[in-house]
Structures are given as C-alpha cells and as structure tokens.
Image (tube, rainbow, N blue to C red; front, side, top):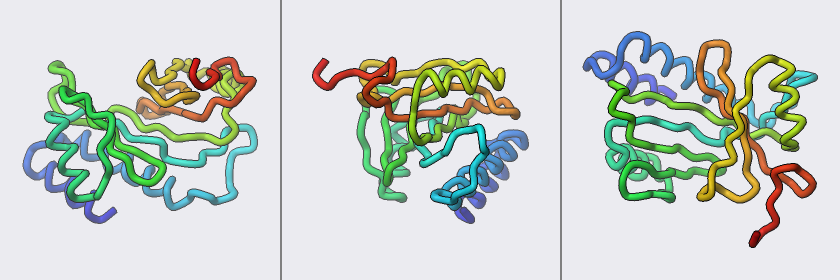
Length: 181
C-alpha cells in the first residue's frame, strides 16, 4: 500500500495527476486494500450481497503495452487476453487488472471501474436488489470473448464511480449457458 501511495504522490508531484485524480485514486486504493484485508470476514449487510473477491480493476491508460509490461515485470502478473492493439488482462490469484488504451477524448489515465465478485449469483435476484435501491443496473455478460457463465451489472456508487458487481452464473439462472453451446 505504501508503494501505491508513493507512486500516486510522485505522479501528482510530476503533474501527471490532478489533485482530484490523486484523491480519487487514494480513496480507491484504500477501499481496495480494505476489501482485500477484510476478505473472509463474516460481517455483511443483512439485505445486501456477500462480496467474496476483488474481481478486477480496469485502467484506461496512455499505452496499454507499457502498463502491461510494468505490472507483469514488477508484480509478476500473468498476461492473457492481449489483443495486440489496445487491451490485455493481467491476472494475479483470483483477480485481474484490465489495461486498455484510453479513448482520445480522455486526457489522462484513470481507473475506469472496479469489479467485486459476490457469492451465490442469481441474475434476477441481483437485478431486483439493485433496482430496489434505485441504482439503475446495466447488464454486462462479458461479450462473446468473456468467460463462460460470468455475468455482472454496472451501477454508480454514491461518489459516481462505476461499480461492477459480478458472479458465476449457475444452472437454472436465466443467463446460464450449457458448455459447448
């Protein structure tokens, strides 16, 4: 965590991050660190979901290959899903980082979204809970190249961050696909 904070401060001092981006990045790093430290803790909201893992963090970056090489070489992450032009996945444990080139309209690199995996995924139940909380869920099944029987919804958290809530789709779920189909 100290290294992340030091890198963020260095980027801020070098003019690569605005004050707002620094604060957002520090808040996200603290939240992620806290979530990882709390993994397996029995405390959860009575009517919410049980988060079981940090699924992934998605970065929009200036050059995905530079980011890919940095994390693979420094952090020992395994590269996969590299399309050779603008995006790759970097895996570690049960989690991953997605590095993709930022759109030309985006002036600086940023965290695009963060995804948490929940236990006991049921598409209809998850959607109903998010709608009950008036969060306007957007379904994301990962597309044709995504992992099989993986689904998620995107919502905005109270601070406007894109939160992705994901899970493994099981037989009987409306989104379940039989293997080979």
